[in-house]
Length: 178
Image (cartoon, rainbow, N blue to C red):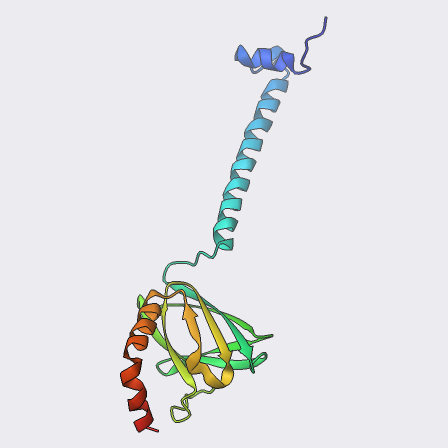
């Protein structure tokens, strides 16, 4: 009469805690393989969680990632993200770019321009408030950067709301400076 399970002798001896049945070490080797497999599966599960966190858009603390698209007129061009006297180059390829940097403060104001140094007389630049996290910038046309829209920044959303509320007062003032 044969047992129903081919590993019956292993299970039976495992239950009796007789890991070295007959001194051959066969059960000890099986037990060690099981432990190794559990370690491998734990490592694999941890690696998958790390990858999933990276794929969902998590950004390290104190940094931002700026993903942008240029819809018209700048499929392959260069833009500049200016902070003080420093400028970072954004190479637009096929209408898209991505840029990551660390922040020196929780919120930083930066300027976007098609030229560096910025030509304030041409008024083809935009200022944005960058924060920690993943941000998205949509530029409808390179010739009108001031109309670009940044999402993902709470401070920028508040500034956009403020600008909308004060537009009826600021537009006449802008005409005076033309």
